[in-house]
Image (tube, rainbow, N blue to C red; front, side, top):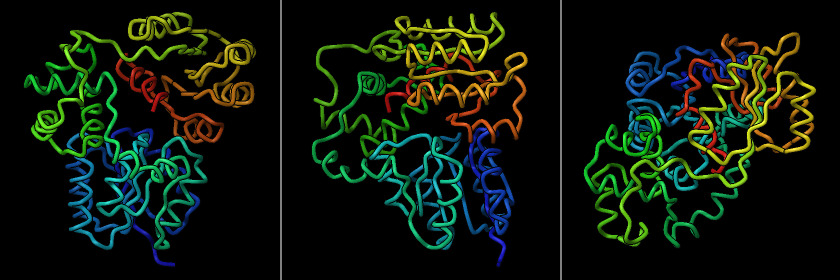
Length: 346
């Protein structure tokens, strides 16, 4: 069998590591390069001329639809599989329309990712099951027009005022990176590709934003009514730090804490949290086993494993145990927590 040369593109090294581990059983695939931004991706494609590209869509210096369209034009035989955390119907439809061969969500099992790669390489189109229903209703959604969240409406107002991303970040209390991600998703939902086009859209569709209000000067994230979060870490000081970061953005969230598996499982069974942050190292116990037991006690809970010592094997085992992500503690600031929590409503 001929060797399939693949390039991995994602701005998080731990995600690239997880994808590489997932593909390890596919002996025909050789990963020739890993990159973390759009410019590096362009160089890697030109240098290696790969057969397969697995790419995220929210990397620095990478506008996904325009970027993928450009890649497809330059490399017509390249198989392109999107591996993303975002399942927005308009977003997915836009990428499929410019020539990707498949769209896979990061929270799906590793075995599904391997199957996705095999299907794409066989010349088929792959769409993972959670977004099939969204695509079935895509035309209906387009016909009725995009429904914007309060935050998206405020972003449009800020754009109308001519504010740049740093100014918007100051007004909203979010990071510049978070603003960039929200704007990318807003553009996809509106079907535009730039700030100017978004402002023009607003001029043509003034009803897109609620009437009579100015942007909130420092609006926190949506309240997520009934938000329940579980923190599992044997370091009480770190749990306190996490609780404060979450509480500042989501003051009404119910936050439970545990320092060992039995206490965490008991809390999860009683409160059924939407989200759990679990440290990989829990004294003499471990977060991977904790994840398995949490998923058994509360199947709908999304578990995010965290660690001060990210390890490739821990990541692989953690995802296989049911975690949706594996994050380095040093990257887990207030903005990252907001992104994780915001994804609960997507």
